[in-house]
Image (cartoon, rainbow over all chains, first blue to last red; front, side):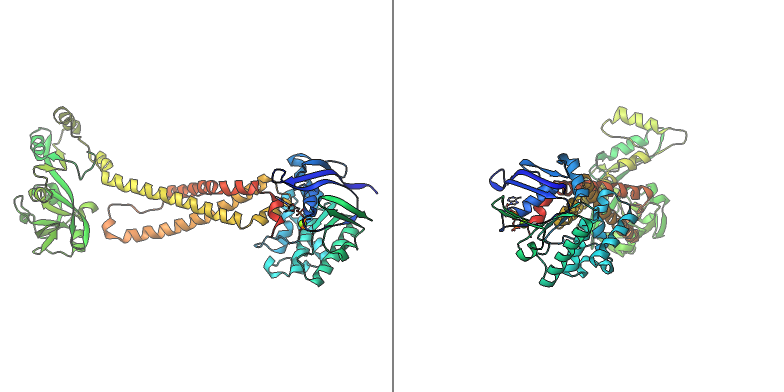
Length: 223
Length: 308
Ligand SMILES: Nc1ncnc2c1ncn2[C@@H]1O[C@H](COP(=O)(O)OP(=O)(O)OP(=O)(O)O)[C@@H](O)[C@H]1O
Ligand SMILES: [Mg+2]
């Protein structure tokens, strides 16, 4: 299988070097792989996802996406637009908009035509079971529906990579199970490379591969 | 003459002017502001009985014979009489003094119609301006140019300026003050408007830091985010402008109903005002969005989304 993401000796610190978070992370992820990123709170999972997705530049080392190492504003932007989709613990939907409008946000960024974008939203909304809720405002939606909405948004521009940072962390038990299942199904059926940062070992075990981090390094890598 | 109400011209100048061949008539006028009961500001014209203002006016009540240079009887403009509720035969208290009302006149000039005419000498005494007037108004003999008087004034009284009617109303500093006031008030309104647009936009940006962050995570460039904020600011200030225009149109309608202001102002909203408001709205919007946009563009989405 070809390599989709390659993290090579990545270092990242905050506060002008005072807070060292990533201390030489190495990780190779194949195309279509579903990987769980585990580790205690503060070990650097979110930071690693941000660096991979181009939200933060690494201090040292490189991240290769499908062979290329995005550098510079334009390439970073392109990575965010078409390379990766982010899902967070909180849905971060824009409160004043309808679910559909929220899902269309990435299409505005890329300039996708409205009709094509709406068709895409409908297709993804059907796959995630929220097609009937598209015209609702965010406050009228349940927690599970909101998180599915943020999943549709992440997938709108059809990125090959999905980065999910504790995507079920804010959900109740039933929804957690359902959304997690949905995420795995979608990733597998659409051939996405998926990284899920999670504390939940039961959920992690259902991924293809579990990587454990401690103190800014990968300490365990089990397929 | 920097200010009509502080200008001092000796009455003797009127007599000198009248001796000029070109001058038909020279009338000293003393302007003053007096207070009447319940009316703190009334314009008072100290004039002679021979002044055309009274000679040509329509006498609603009383007659010119009662207005005498050596008397203390006053004449009211029609509107002044109305709001002072004064009738001939009554006494009217103006400032420290009370004066018998000799008559009521209707004049063409709204300014004069809301004022009080007082014998010049009497006015000079009341306002401690013995021997002086505020202006001397000159009527020309037929066949003579105003330039002749201007020349004569320049040669003999360089301290004073001779103005034609139009020039006079332009330099009429009371109107200037009104205009300046309007501009100052307008400027303050502009500043306030700008501040409130900024404020609205800052609140809007600060309360939606995560939303802005997610928009960035979804691939919006800094330029796209900035445009979004400027656009929103334009909408906010455009709505403000519409509201402002509606309110001021209503306000002007009310102003038209105030009798004291008739003749002073022309309360109208023309295309110029509307275009001006539009321009101001756009400028306000752009200035008001400057800081919020700068803030939103600098925002690091990873930081904004990390914590709850
Ligand atoms: N912008 C920042 N400035 C300062 N410190 C930061 C910043 N971002 C992250 N950190 C610190 O880096 C460390 C790792 O954070 P990170 O969010 O990557 O951990 P995590 O493994 O995702 O933890 P959790 O499981 O709680 O989400 C933490 O100690 C955090 O406080
Ligand atoms: Mg985290």
